[in-house]
Length: 550
Image (cartoon, rainbow, N blue to C red; front, side, top):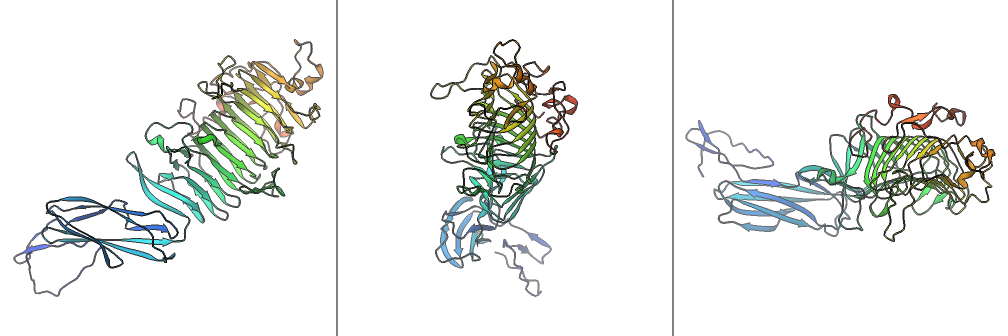
């Protein structure tokens, strides 16, 4: 080492990384020799962990020195915990794991210092602080196929925002507990970690009394998707489900509450937040539902939501009174929509489209739960349901039982009112009604179970079982002319077929605003009136079957 004196007062400068400057002669010529390098591979000098966490905390660093490594020292709170010496090494990967010690509490900090000396005696030091918190969720950088994401785990217990300038990765089951709010900015992509273990899955649950604020825009939607999108091999069943719970009444519980959750309550107008311009894709691992709505109230905003490719059910509604507009389910391999547990909500402008390569079992499935009160009794208008084709070959499950491939199935004594439906291209029933208790609920347009102003065509059986009570077929000698009161038909709606749900028919329709003031004016049969008013292609939020944006 060359010592140079300038006759000036000594100045000490403390920085995060210490380096040695070598000067010569009178200070006019200064030669800098590159100091040794300590790189924290986690990318941060501050690590935050839950004080109750029992998983070892990794701190991995890269050591390098152009003049050669000489020695390395690690201290914890001032005490030496590890030392290394080197001979002819120029770089080294150092891996350290720390287990949070008994007796530490939230607010405590563990101070690590990494000290590296090279063969010229130059020294670099790098401090790292482990801050112990009583937080239930944690964020740390992680990498997928070369892209850095913010990995998030645990249970969100405060107001938290997922920003659009960050790629997020949910690692396991992420909860949002009562009193907390999860806000997601428009244009945010939330990746979901996949697991090879069948017993592990990622998902999000917004608990009762928590809140979701996921309001995208038509050109900047919020997308929940598989991390395998980044590697080009995403598929249905990569992760679990998105769950939303509220305080609206359900049946089958105690005082309107399902305790295993919990969800439900006595607040039909309960507001669990907003989800608008959202796409949820590649869900359904281990039979999970893509989007579970459990006891969700009518104060919650649910609009412009697409479920894309799931091996489980699509929209699974358990009780509640939620209202939903502009809804799409594409390539769902179980039921596209199923409701139960006393669901009494409303819906308008819904599209269900089956994949011809793997078929949905039942597209629109309504039922009650164990004949309990209050009965399921929703009201819907302007719905288009497309099957895989009336001549499509049946798929078989593992027990070689064929999937039903039905359009609508009303069962378990459900009530409900359905208007302006198109049901077509199913290789089994189009409209099927069963277990209606001796037609006690089928008593005309003012009955408890109404299917009206609906066109079911090009199915193996357009109306089956008790569904035949909703259609008058003049070509069937056994058909009752009194059934014409429902204004249903088996006529074809031009332009509607496999892969094409855009189109409607005004003749034979009812204006839904005459049914309930919540409905928007739409006096046509079907979900999408025409190409000029195709709400599914307005923006970049909705996908086609081939994965392209509509």
